[in-house]
Image (tube, rainbow, N blue to C red; front, side):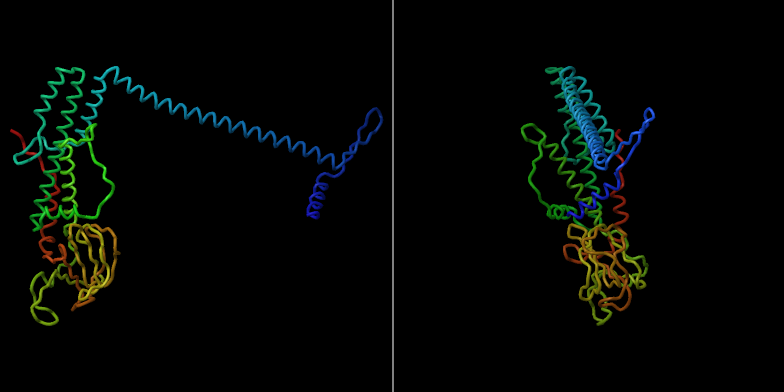
Length: 383
C-alpha cells in the first residue's frame, strides 16, 4: 500500500515539478518559485470546480427533462379527459348527432359484409324481426321522438344479426351437403368436433344490462360455431393425391394376398413408384404417428379431426415429425418397400374412428365437391 502511494506521489511530482519564474521590473529581476505542492493544490481546486460545474449541469438537465415529461403526461391526460368530456357533451347537446354517428357506423359494417342473404327462404328457421322492428320504431317515434333514430339503428342491428345467421346456416348446409356426397355424416362430424379437448373458465355472454342474452344473438353464435366446425371438417377430408404416380397396383377390398395366394382384405390403395419418390399429405391435419407398424413397415399417420386419420405405409424415409401441422400437398416422406411388401410402393389408408374405409371416393370426388361447396353461391333474383 505504502509503495503504491509512494509511486503515485512520484508520478504527481513528475507532472508538477518545482518551477521558477522571473519578473523584470524597473531594472530589477525577481525570481518566484512555485513548488510542486502548490501546483497540485491549485490543480485540485480547478478539478473540484469542474466536477461541481458538471454535476450542477447534470442536475439542471435532469430537472428540465422531468419537467418536460411531467408536462407531456399532463397534456396526454388532459387530451383524454377532454375527449371523453366532449363526447358526453355531444350526448347532452344533441342526441340526434350521436344517433347519426351510430347510423354511419352501422352502414359501414353492413357495407363491409356485402355477401349476406337479402331475404329469407322457405324452410329456414331464423327469426325475422323486420315487421316488429318497424312497429317498434313507430311507437318509439310517437312516444319518445328524440330516441327515434336510436330505435331505427336497433332495428337495422337486429336485421343484420339475422342476415348473418342465415349466411352461416346456408354455408353450413353447403358444407353438410358436400360431406354427405362423400359418404360421411356431417352431424356426426359436428358432434365429434364438440367433444374435442377444450376448456377454460365459464364466461357467460350477455347483450342486456341485466346479464340476459337476446335469443337472436345466441342463435347467431350457435350458427357460426356449426359453420366453423363443418369448415374444419371439410379441410380435413382427403382431397390431394398422396403420390405423384399413375400406377394403382391394388385397390381397396378383397384381393389375392401376394404372399399366401389366399383371399384377404386390402384396407387401402397401393400406388407403385420408385424408391425415394415423394409422398404427400392428402389433407390438412396434424401428424399423429411416425414409426413402424407390423406389416406396414415405416408409417406416418395424420389426424384430420373428427376421428378421421390417413395412413401412409412402406416408406423408405420420413420427412415429418409427430405434432407437425401439415397442409394438403406437403411432403411427409418417400416411397419405399419396408414391411410386408413385394416392391416399392405407397400403401394409403383412410380410417374413420379406427375403421378403414375406401379412399377412392375421397381422392376422385373430393376435389370437385369441396370446390363447389366453397364457391360463393349467388343469391336468387327476386321477382
